[in-house]
Amino acid sequence: MHLLKFTLAMHKEIGSGFKPQRSLEVIMFTSEEPTRFGISCLGSRLLAGIVQLTEQMKSTKDSHNVSFFDAAKSAGYTNAKGDLSEVSLKKGTYSAFVKLHIEQGPILEKGVSIGVVTAIAAPASIKVTFEGSGGHAGAALMPERNDAGLATVELALAVEKHVLNSGSVDTVGELLDCLRDPSGMTIAMLLESIAAKLDTVSSSCKVTANIKIVQNVMKFT
Image 1 (cartoon, rainbow, N blue to C red):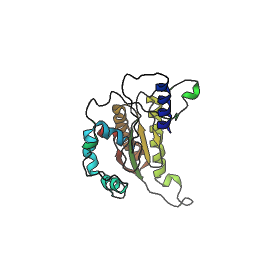
Image 2 (image 1 turned 30 degrees about the vertical axis):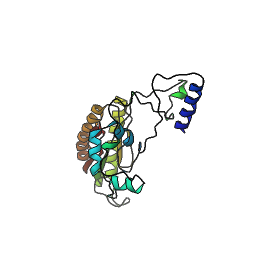
Image 3 (image 1 turned 90 degrees about the vertical axis):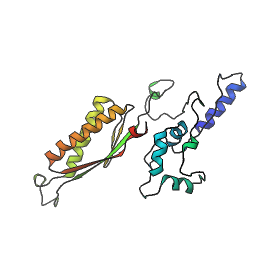
Image 4 (image 1 turned 60 degrees about the horizontal axis):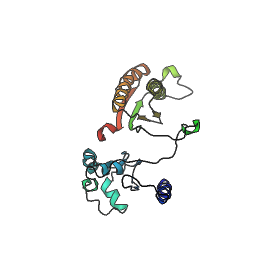
């Protein structure tokens, strides 16, 4: 829909005498916000020539152990031969990229005529598993249990505290924390903070904790 609106708008402007200083092209990328392989902005970053990403995709598989290239072939991308470097553009091919996007927050509702994105809140997802010792909810009283759920709540509160102090856009799901910030350094600091907090929380709640980084955006930037 955005592509159609942009195309119609530019057709109208050019028909009215507007002459752009540079040639304009409308591009629709594939796999910009996927969840299957845990890598976002895949199409645009490959086109931009992110070398590290092209190498990473050679060994990337989904939760069912299906490789990225096998999935690409099954979707009809017959040229998926294991080498993604051929899709990258030469440096200088484009002067700039402009992405049109719907408003997903309350900014424009505050009377602002246009919202311009200055950075992407890139995600770094971590999965934390708490293991405690429970018991019958009626027979084993809370002081006699080591509830993993309480440790999870403590961690969620720690993430909330970080959000209030840093302004990041973090999300605590069921057992998944999605950390977002334009700065890779901020995300790295939060990961260190969470790891340190895990030691404190697991000790005070008498549970064991295991942390796993599901997606680290710093690998691809």
